[in-house]
Image 1 (spheres, rainbow, N blue to C red):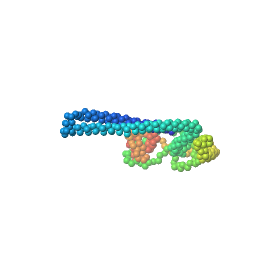
Image 2: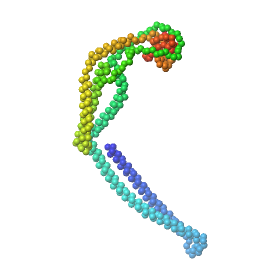
Image 3: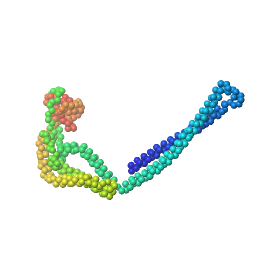
Image 4: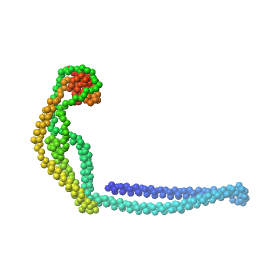
Length: 393
């Protein structure tokens, strides 16, 4: 339909262009005619003027013998000759330009009329062909639109999946699969502590190791990802296996839909050979069939993977909570509280930033080097100058 509309617009442009050329020729013919009339009137007036001032009679003929009278007579004769030249020019313009251009314009108009008639017939034939094409190929157009939509959806899903792949991998490798433990009860110690005995130092002390709840004492080597997700905890493995099965099922359904669409297209080609060659679709049909077979095999493999979730989950739970109990022994409690007197920007390693008036928990008192370790309300822990805070009794 777009092609037909474009052709119609081109025809309109051609009609306007040719009509503009014909109008220009017609204007030029009128211009030459009016100029011819002006030349003829001009020549007529010149002849009348020459005739008016020419002398006649015996007395006038005697006066013409003198040089001054003879010169004026010559001027009148030349004026009469000039009038004859203007008449000749007007006659030539009328015969050589107006008559020829008028005949040429009539021929061009007749030829243009013939071409426009042929173009109208061609436009009608083209529109009829479009209507016939739309009536005999609705299935083909639907299949083409379906394949195009599937490709767009696949590209969008692929771009989103790639952008989230790293985040999902990081989360899956560090999640335990169990519910979160409850909040740790906070104990407030209000006894006083010994104030600092030295001035602030310009150099921060050596950073001491921080102890956090559920922290690991040794670096954990993350095992490589296994195809059956055996490297994950039981609950995660169960979720990932189910997600894998769902993904394969969706991909299998999409591939099956593409196969059905190709079969319909092949049927359309067989019924209407002028629309395409059915054998050209055989490679795509074969490739789709192989993909369906591969996906069915993968689906069967993931559905029969043995995994005793209950026994593995109990054993894993005992190991996890045993490790947590061991680490709970290392959790530090605050030994006091203090209030920040000034704002401090912790730019060095091991230091933290505090703001004036902020309430802090004292985790380690000043050892004589002018620094103390504190804990902020947002969980951030580090060293600050002892002289920047006031201990709360």
